[in-house]
Length: 84
Image 1 (tube, one colour):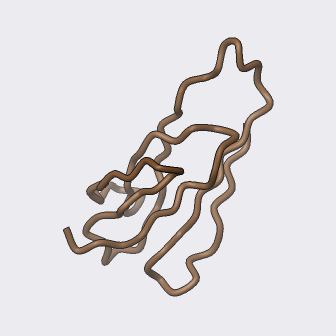
Image 2 (tube, one colour):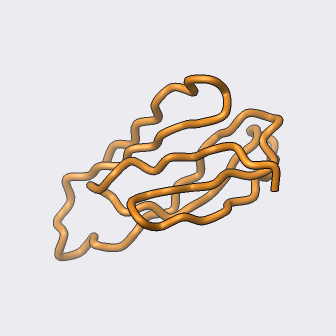
């Protein structure tokens, strides 16, 4: 399995691409992604295809993150900073 995080073009958006080469017979479920975001992000709007959710950001000892489920081998998930 491989996850690729693309650059933060202007500090307010990121794209996450999740791919794997495992058998679809056993691995057809979305996977939870924990994505690091800048310290000033209160939340992120996460879009993957037609699905849009609001993911609150949280802090831990490792940094600031949002979590979301993403479908592997599909469109990239786009995270956009929100003030919510």
